Image 1 (cartoon, helix red, strand yellow):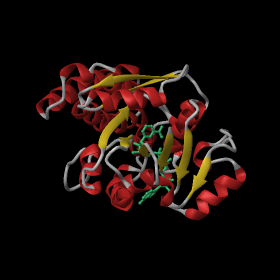
Image 2: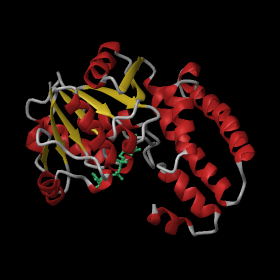
Image 3: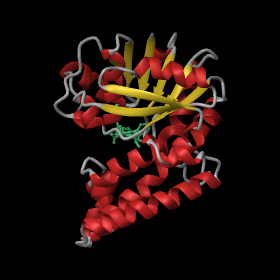
Image 4: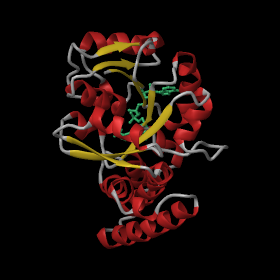
Length: 272
Ligand SMILES: NC(=O)c1ccc[n+]([C@@H]2O[C@H](COP(=O)([O-])OP(=O)(O)OC[C@H]3O[C@@H](n4cnc5c(N)ncnc54)[C@H](O)[C@@H]3O)[C@@H](O)[C@H]2O)c1
């Protein structure tokens, strides 16, 4: 299958490698052409250090790579998803499947990432959310990981499942895109709080208290906003909360630690 991954951050690069390992044709698009050239030359991405990029991975700064693509993965940071959606809109065709892997809620509109993408692209193709406990650094090393492909249209979710499923990357399907996306966004707030706890010198009891009560709160809010209760207890909910709150791969967690230690918020954000 011809696939394109938009966004050459750590996560876009790791997912491009999953698709490549599965035998798909993959182009990794970077919005900075000079960065694309550098990655094509060095066969490495500084945002995913120590993971070689095979020659068979095409890297480009040209959106013309979207011509004829069947599966397009949008891995932009959440604040840039609308901008990316607008840029790719002229290239999209009804048969393509668009996968959103960004975790967040859009500032000002409060829209989920799949809603932002649909709005920005004129709603021409199916949008599937892929989410779960998955640090790019570990996926790049092919360590066992599992995610959820969510779409109200189960065929769309299955297509994404088939494209990504491998011996070390397991994909479950769900029809609950609302719950999956809300869980992904809301746990970031808790990861920040968990980091603050650690930065203040609190230990495991406090973290467990925070994570457990947060899970209850995320579930109540998520259900109220239309998500299914069971989603929040699964990989996209509980799984992602655990991985984000307990790992130093998580920038939210690391920023929280600095804030808890007394660093100004802006400075902590810049450092991570
Ligand atoms: N890193 C992970 O392990 C991971 C896992 C799951 C989901 N995600 C989600 O994937 C998304 C991307 O995360 P990441 O870790 O790859 O980010 P990253 O920080 O590694 O990279 C961000 C990339 O976005 C680019 N960028 C910056 N501003 C941009 C703009 N205005 N328009 C388009 N691109 C821009 C940067 O050049 C960089 O290549 C986030 O929403 C994140 O929540 C990340």
